[in-house]
Structures are given as C-alpha cells and as structure tokens.
Image 1 (cartoon, rainbow, N blue to C red):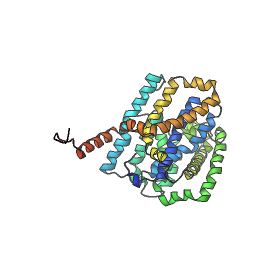
Image 2: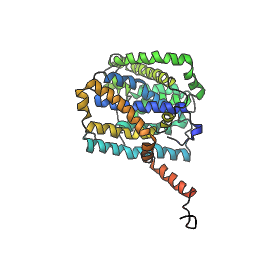
Image 3: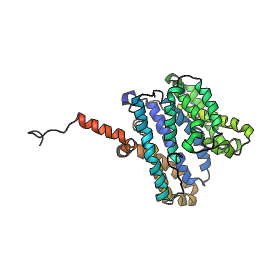
Image 4: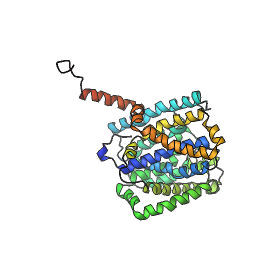
Length: 350
C-alpha cells in the first residue's frame, strides 16, 4: 500500500501478504457455503489466526509512520479515500443489485469487508505513540480484554481495541526477531502447531465461541460465563498469535516470481473481491452448493484462490489499481506528463 522500490522490498513479506489476503477471500467466500458440512471447520481454522497475522503484518509495515505531511497525505490517499468510496459502493451493490437487507448508516458503521480500512487508519494515527515504548504491548493486551465490554458497531471500536495487541506487536518486533521464524526448529514446530489449531477448530464452540474469533462481538452477546470470558478471550488471542507465527514461518523467504509480485496488489484484492463474491450469491450459487455440498465447498475454496490470483494479475491490476488510489493515480499521471512532454511538430514528428 506504499510506494516502495522493488529493490528495497522484502519478498518474504510480499509472499506473506499474498497468502493472507488470499485467505481473506477464502474466508469471505465460505459464507456462500455456510450450511455445508465442513465449512464451519474451515472457517474457524482460518479465522483463529489469519486476522491476527494480517493485523500483525500491518503493524510491522507501519513502523515508519509519523505525523508529517507526506505520511498523513499517504494515509488519506490509501485508506481514507478508498474507505469513503468503496463503503457506499459495496453497500449499494449489495442492497440494490444483490438484494441483501443491509442497513444504514454508512461510514459510521462500516459494512462487511470495509471495517479493516477504517480500523487500520485509526491504528496508524496513534502509531507514533504506540511505538514509543514496549510497555504499550502489555497495555494493549489489557485494552483488548476490556474491548469486549463495548457493544457497538460504530467505527468498529471493538475490533480496533480487540486486535490492537497484534498491531502493537508488529510495531515493536524488528527484522532480527522475525528472522527466527526461519529457524529449523520453528518451522518444524509450525506443522504440529497448525494441526493442533485445526483440531481446536473442530471444537470451537466447546472451548470458546466463534464470535470471539471476529473480535467484534461484546461479551454480553457471547454465551460464556462472565467469570471466564476474559480468560477465553486471552486464550483465543494466544492461539491466534501461535497460528500466525506458525503460518508465516512456512512461507518461503525467497522471491516466488509472479506470486511475490502479486503480493504488492493486496489492496486491489481486498477492495474488489467482495463484489465478485456477492455477485455469485446474487446468481444463486448457494442453490448449487446446497445441492452438491462437498463439491460446492471445494469449488468455493478453489474459486476464492483463483479470484485472488486473478485480481492481482498484471492485466486486471492495471485496470483496477487506479480506483484503489484515484488521487495518487492522477498525481502520477500529471508527473509523467511533466517528465515526458508531448513532442512538438517538426520534421521528425510525423
């Protein structure tokens, strides 16, 4: 989401970003087959760790943010403007084209996928404070546990508070820390860790509650005794952290060519995949999955992966990327014209 020269990019981070945003698409697509046997296990397994991982990476990539003119302008261009544009676009597409019963208000209560843009914007705004001292990390855990006391969708404050520790951890960990994810013992341990989380996902509603995985539901709406709900929330956070690091340790460090390049197009994937998923819903795809449950689940997962790859492919990305940052795109166009003025008429121009 920021202008970084290819030479200075970390291919591992681009690989991680592409894996995580693909899982975002898969997780949202699972909603098309939620009545299918096995879909709840896949959904819970993904959501136990992939949102924490996504938030952690966002924090890690936000280290350089300061309250200066250039970065504040970038924040407006890459988060605020897309939120203002895509929040109503997806809302009206779902309501008027697909026929979903979504309701107002816009912007104040983010709809579906749009929550991450406004929450990330708010995290970025307080980044200069959060990165000042490591003590903000344990403080953020306390804030997260208290966040479940909020019961509102306004600006997704529960998620802003609940997922804060993962963002703050990303701010404070350095490249030398993440280099340990490449240690042999870490990568070996990652496999049984993810298998264990997979087993836990089978029994999510036994030891926790699926609503805790979203970090947007108040404790008052979760059927867990008040005496242990804080402990359960903390357990979910720890599982999410272990799963995030386990998954990231298995992502290759080297450049994977086209796949790594696609990791620079995560905003395109994030902003546009919801329209495609809802279009399939409007076309009656859920009737097909109801008739062929297992086939529907497999095709949905494979289709979600294909959708992420398609949206990040160079031809599609070139068309869609200007919509994700229209003001930045216009500035680049103006700069290009100033650098390459049109040739004047003369003997060699025709």
